[in-house]
Image (cartoon, rainbow, N blue to C red; front, side, top):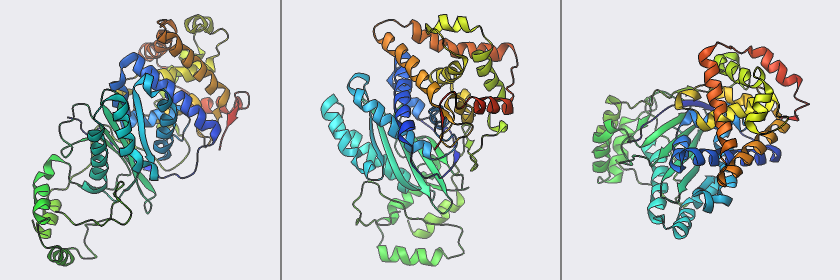
Length: 436
């Protein structure tokens, strides 16, 4: 059964992604997805999307702000634009989106069912249920505003959805995956990612089984009596805060009944058994824009730089069959290869992946557009060759990660963080650096 794999703080960011970056995110995101499918299969791509730390690292390698909630919206929009045009060949469809687009998800899933033969009605119901659980059964103060449902032509699926708390200027991202899923109402999440606000009401936890039973009993009570009991129990000084949640798929004027044996039993049950969000995949993203040395595993970053700058460049030219390939592009490709081939333990410092293509806000440095384009070109060429049976270039790119790991094991190339940033900024104009 899937379980929570992490909780992270995500500062709420607003704004738009410029076209020059959005199109590159679309292209590189598509190619990374294709590479994962080519090497590991479609289910593995869904598993990756369900890992909050991998997802954050993926967004950083695409040039988005390394720490912000904006990664969720921008990455899923890029994947929808990149994968849906090739969905019939790749077998992966991205549905939904932000705001009004989230409400189109059930219809999109029914259409995919008609085209592929998967059970569109089941998927549509699953989509609604995932949104209902995170919007209503998990009362954490965050209101859902984005829902993406990713499904394969074999019926496997993943959900990435996000809520916001405008007062706290924070966002929480929720991850779901169909792999090994037995129940929608007991520990269904692979992860909940977001601003850690302490104890929350989570009615999906297995320890909340008795509370769910109380809710069902409460639903049979007279609503007026229920509300009178709640007013008597929940005073302004109470530590329990009941916040309204948005039903993403309900009409705007719909009303919601309070469900749940008496209100007093329910609240005392929750008070006795607080459900905490906690796991080994915790990740805290600071509100500051700047990347600091403590945000990065300097040994791993050092191994990336050593792989790119200290090896014989002629070896890499032969390896990648790309005459004139420079070390700066190798730096980006090494991090891209890690996103494709790395194990979960590799993604505990998402900020490190911003050293592939920078960040749109200029942190840790401007997006090097020329390097970005080279990464897209080389990765795209390797995939096209692999499709016709020539895997040499794909295998070579994959071995970049193996080379990086060997450097890490056999020496200790700690990166000089400040000099690395200084070097990137000094060459930013040469590499076509851009910021928003």
